[in-house]
Amino acid sequence: MERAIFAGGCFWCMVQPFEETKGVLSVRSGYTGGHVPNPTYEQVCSKTTGHTEAVEIIFDPSLLSYTDLVELYWRQTDPTDAFGQFQDRGDSYRPAIFYTSESQRDIAEKSKENLANSGRFDQPIVTTIEPAQTFYEAEEYHQDFYKKDPFRYALSSKIRHDFLEKNWS
Image (cartoon, rainbow, N blue to C red):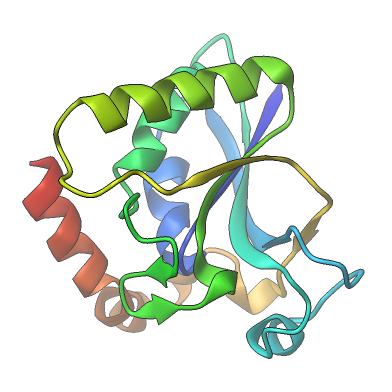
């Protein structure tokens, strides 16, 4: 099994697309990249811990490549917005790919370069590619939010879905 960590705004909206992909074994919402051990949601929201909301994906590389995961990641985010994603603003919602190996870093960098050269976006691709740090799972009520509260999930993800449909269809 292999591990991938992606940040792309509210972690609630990042789970479903990955969880529904063949070869993905688990997707957990959490926090990474900060300086406070075991942060709570309230601490991360205070913007004082340095953490970013992210998802940790465990996948079977014999069924799904990291390259395919990165390509799916791009289709969940606005890679031109460094200051948050959609209605979620601030550093804790910034887009980032956290690599766990040099191979993942190389794949992510090449994919970012290809996206930048594709002409799909008229702004620079600003998603960062950084070494993975400790990933702290979010509280249980954040896990599988799209299943637990589908109405609230639909409301919170509408702007994201509209953007993705416009830019990736």
